[in-house]
Length: 596
Image 1 (spheres, rainbow, N blue to C red):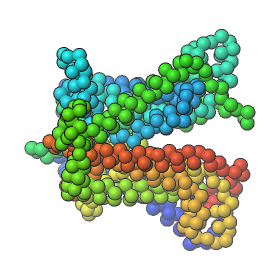
Image 2: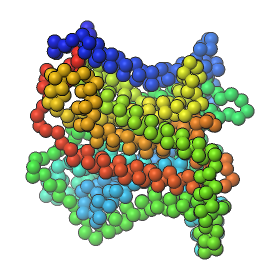
Image 3: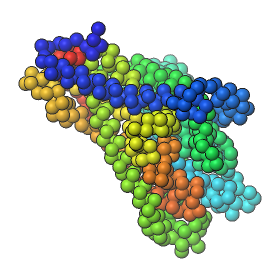
Image 4: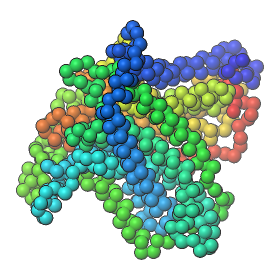
C-alpha cells in the first residue's frame, strides 16, 4: 500500500513525483535532524569511550552510575528542584490567570502585558540579577538590610531554596500563558449556578473552576517540570558555586573536564535514562493539551463572562501582581543596569553615583570576543528564525494535505524535539558530528544553527498547524486547476495567506535563540561564541562583572523588543478567523496526497 495516499485527480506523473519527492525530502530531513542524533546518544552509553563506532559494548557506565550514591543525591536534588519550582510557577500562573480573566482587577490590559514581559529576561540574567541582589557577600538587599538592622546577611541566594525561588519566578509567565486561555473560554454559568446554590468564592474555585481547568493546569505543570528537570542556567549560576548539583549542571561539568577527555560514555548512560522520563512527560503534555479543549464550555453569541467583584481586594490583587513583576523583572534588571555603569561592584549609595559612566559599555562592546559573539548571534538568530518559520510552514502544509499515515509520521517527528531537552540535544549533536566527520560543522556556528532549528521546530509546527487548518481551499484549488506547479502554488497562495503566523514564529524563535544557553554552552568553541555563552563566561570566569552586566542589558532590551512584536503579532493572529466554508473533501493541492 502506498502510504503517501491515493491520487484523487488524473494528474501527470511529473506532479505525482514532485509531491512525493517533497514529502520524502522533509521526512529524511526530520529523521536527520532528530532521530539519528538521538539514537547515537543512547548507543554511546554502551560504549567504553562513548564514541559510537568504537568496538565492543559494555554496561559498565550504567553499573557505575547506579551503584554510586552520588547519583541518587543528584536525582533527589533534581526532583526537589523541578517539583518545587513547578509548583510555585503553576500556582502563581493560575492565580494570575484567574485575576486577569475572571475578576475586575484594575488596569487589566497592563497587568496581562506585565505578566508576560518577564519572558524577555533569560534565566541566566535573572539569576545574575538575584546574585547581585541577594548574595551574602555582594548582594545589594543584604547590604541595605545589614546597614539598617545590623547583624548578618538575611538572604543567601546560593541555596536550593534560592534556585527554586528564581526558577519559579522565571516560569510563571509560561504557566500563565498556558492556563489563561482556558479561563477565557470557560462558560461562567456553572460558577453562577454554584453561587446561586450558596457556594462562596473559594468553594466555587475548588469544586467548579479547578476541575474544569485541570487539563490546562496539568499541561502547564508537565511542560514546566519537563524543562526544570534539565535546565542549566539557573542551577548553573546559583547551585554550582555552592556545590549543589542537579542533572543539567552535572552533565555540563562532566562535559567540560579540564584535565581529561569528557566522560562521554558516562554522560550518555545518564542521559539515556532521563530521556525516558522527558519523553513520557512530553507525551503526557501533548495528551493534556489535546484534552484541554474538551473541558471548556463555550456559549453562543450572547456569551459574556461575568467578572467577580473583588471589591477593595482588587487593589491588594493589583499590588500582588506589581510585587511579582518587581521580583521577576524590575529589581533584577535595575540591579544589572546599575552594575553595568560601574567599574567594580558597589552597593547603591550617593558616593557610588560619582563612579557611574559609559566606559564599561565602550570597553565591553569593543572586545574582539564580544564582537565575534554579536556577529555569530546575528547569524544564528536570522538563519534559525527564517528556517524554522519556512520549514514549519512546509511541514504543516504537508500534514494538512497528507494521508493519515504520513500525517502522523510528520507530526510525530516534528513533535519529538519537544521531548529532547536542549542540553541532551546538544550532547547528541556532539556525538553525531564527532562521529560523522564528513559534515564539518563541529566547532562552528553552524552546529548551533542546526541545534536551534531542531529544538524550535516543535514550537514552529504547533503554531503553523493551527494557522494552516484555518485556510480554505478555494485559491489553492484555482491555482491547481490552472496548472500552477506545486512550489508556485505554495509560494504565491499559501505563504501570503499564512504569513502572519510565519512572522509570529520567526519573531518568537529569534527571541528564544537569543535566550538559549544550555545547548549553546555545550556546543561552544572559540569560533562559535554567542551572546548567551559569553555572558556566562564573563560572569563565571571574568573579574569584571560589568562586562556581563553590559551584555545583559543589551540582551534584555533586544528581547523586550522581540517580545513586544511577538505579543502584537500573536494578538493579530488571534483576531483572524477563517470563513465557515469547509475544504473540499476530494481536493488536495499537493498532488498524490489525500486531503484530510
